Length: 465
Image 1: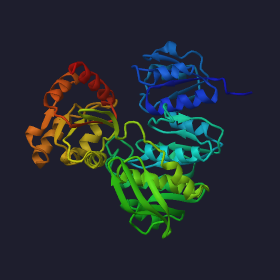
Image 2: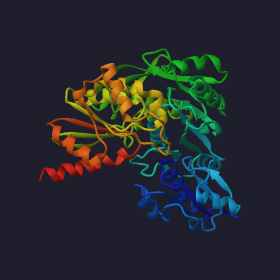
Image 3: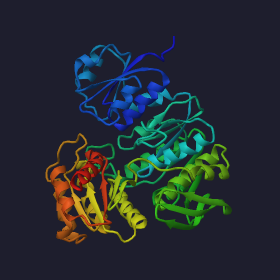
Image 4: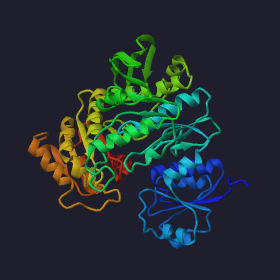
C-alpha cells in the first residue's frame, strides 16, 4: 500500500527545519497539517501548497494523523505531543523522520559550526545545474529553495545537519563534510556540558561514520587538521594558500565579489569566480566544489555553475541600498560577528558601520559574553537588543547588559558608541536620530530580529515623505 497520501502532523512547523521538512513531504505527495504557537513567515507558502496550519497548540489539532513529527524545540509536555502518544500515533523527532524519509538516498551531509547553510546551498546549486536533481534540505532560504528544501527523484540528498543536540550523529552519511569546529553549544545542560573536547569528539564520530570511506574537511581549521591525522578514513581536504588537495591562491576581493586561482593537488585548474564576498564564502565554495569532484563533476563544470550562485537569505543580504544601506544577517556567534564586520568593511569601504545585535540564547551568552565584547570591535556604533531566549529559561545574571559591561571593561567601544534599546519602536526612533548619509546598518541574529530590517525600511519610507 502506498503511503504517499498519508496524513502527517508537524508540531512546531514554523521553525526553519520543520518548514523545510514540511515542504519535502508536500512535494513527495503527503497531506500535511501543522501547528505553531505563533504566526511565521512561511505559513502562507505552505498553505498555498496544500497544508493546513493551526496557530496555537490544541488537542483538537491532532485529527487522526498517521504520524506526528515534532521539532526539537517542543517540550515533552506539549499538549499535542501528549495527545498523539495517548492515541498511540507513531511519533518522530524531526531529524529522525528526515533520515527515515531519505533511507534509500546517498546522503551528502554538511556539518560544522559556521557556513553549513551556504555550503549546502552551493553544493545543491552545482549538482542541480549539472542535472543530477538532488534532494535538498537546509536551514535557510535561497532563490532556488524559498522554503529551504526540494524533493526530487535524484540519487543524492544534500542535507544540513545539527550538532547542538547531537542529532547529526544519527546521519547515515554517504559523504560527510565538516566546514569548521568552534566553541558553540557548550551550555551546562546540553550534551557537551561545558567541555569543548566532547564537541570535538562528536565531530570526529560524525566524520568516521562515512559510508563511502571519504571525508571532506577544511584543513585550515586547527582541530580538523589534527583529525586528518587520527582517522583511518580517506581525507580529502581544502584550504587557502596551503598544501591541501583543493586550494586557492592569488585571491582578489572586489566589494561583494571575489576571484582566485584554483589548484588541485598542486596543479592549477581554472579561475574561481564568486559573486558573494570574502574568504568565508571561498571556504564554502571549496567544500562544495570538492564534493562535486568526488561524485564525478569536473572542475570546469563546477566553476561554471558556482559563478551563478547568488547567496543565501540572511547571509549578508543587502536588502536596501539608497541614501543608506541595510544589511540583514544571521550571525550570532562571536566568530561570525567578527567575520560579518570584516565583510562589511570589505564591501562598503570606509562607510560608517552601525551594528544592531540581538544576542541569541541565555546559554550561549553565559558562555561567550567576553568573546561577544571583542567581536563588535570593528563597528562604529552598536545597538544592543535584549537577548532572544529561543525557548530557553532565563539564567540569573545573564542578559544583554553583561555584554555591555564587558565591552566597557575591555574598552572595545566607548560608552558613547553603545545604545541599549528595549523594543523596536525605541530602536527605530534612536537609530533614525543618528543616521547619516552613506551609513551601513546591519541587523544580525537568528531570532526575532529577522523581521526588523523590513520594518525599519517601512519606518524610513514613512519618515522621509
